[in-house]
Amino acid sequence: MARFALALTVFLAFTAFSFRVVFIDGLAGLVAIHGFNGWGPQILIDLVIACVFVMFGLVPDAKKHGISPWPFVIGILLLGSISTLAYAVVREWKRMHAPSMAAA
Image (cartoon, rainbow, N blue to C red):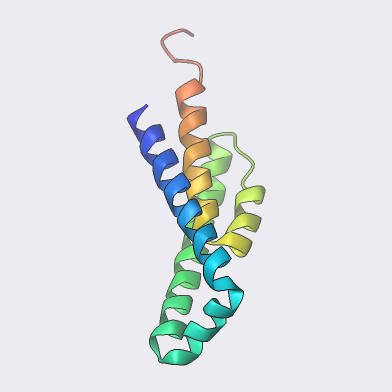
């Protein structure tokens, strides 16, 4: 339960923060930061690399746990880490509600 609560808390906090940034700065703020200096493109490339590696690990993990990976893969392409955090929430929820091996 603690892992689910942590995953849900981080997901909700980061999603709320992200939507706030988009609402206040708009997508123009995203474009502007990448032209400011070398850090903008570096951070973007770093995020893309991290998300690609997450996708390669997420697909087999999701299949192993009986979760369709494709909504999360598409979500990663559109929303980045928000979708990764959503997967963590769904995976923990499914783990908490899986039939216990002791009951079998």
